[in-house]
Image (tube, rainbow, N blue to C red; front, side, top):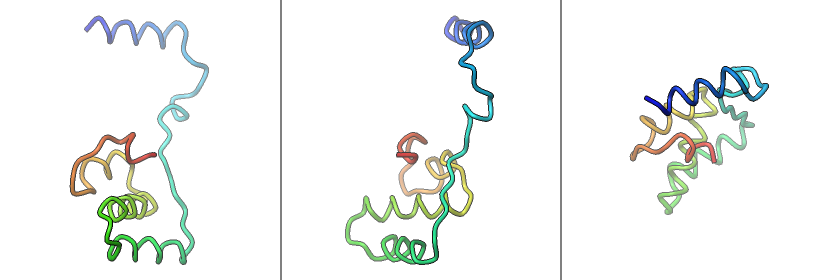
Length: 86
């Protein structure tokens, strides 16, 4: 409770000079057809599980899903949104 009050006070008094839309920006990814084919191939056939998961996340973000949606529901194991954005 105290933490939320302090954070609210910080934003109300000091702020950071940015608009809310800049702080809450959604990550996007534009892929060429060749990049999309390469990512699909990696997602479906690469022997390394981490690379398959990363390719899947990139394809989902390119399709318009938010990093939070992908992190929580789009992968085999739920991840933090910050992990997906790296």
